[in-house]
Length: 272
Image 1: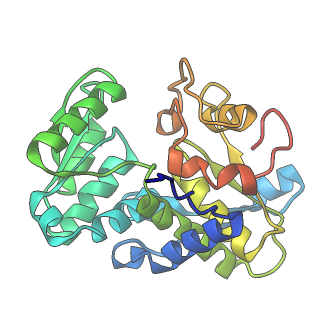
Image 2: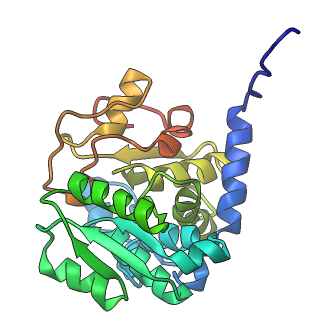
Image 3: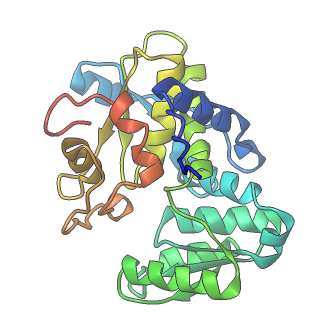
């Protein structure tokens, strides 16, 4: 008997975009999130000599775009998964997004946070219905504990960025931007941590408006996407700065990195 392996079908960049856009269009974010305004920034525009618009995701119920991805992921759970609840690890906006999304859907949500998390953030999660477990002095310790709890309790772990449904939810930001700005648009600047937001935005924008640049912005001491693009593969930063703790990520997400090199250009050492 001759054995052989069937080669995995090659997925073209356009097919990848098409699938991600389909997910974005199907994301049920408006069950909980709102469409935020694209607001002119006159002082900033005058200072830079360009028209600058701000996407006001700070107006979301949890003051961040993270609610989009969290709700989209939780909405995809089946009946058994909903019964067992969800677990995540976060010290910031993802924690509050998961807590509020779970509360809206009637699910139990356990949020593991480092013991060093400011009390204001802990109370923000509790006030939105999340059960807080404080563990470890840093995020990696909290993450390891969350994964252990998810395994022992049979709960679903909700990644903060590296998940197709989370990326799809974040991609609805781009859907709104292109609808709100149908005319001339040169570039969209996207903050990058783990890469969920830029992956969703890049997929949607490059599918509908390929001429629009998508530019990632990272702290110089937490540049996991820039390092990955330079190496041609995901790398782990030996250390990251924590001044901007919301984007202090050592390695770009696998699902997040997939569409970015093909659709986000590099124009220098400090741009992606």
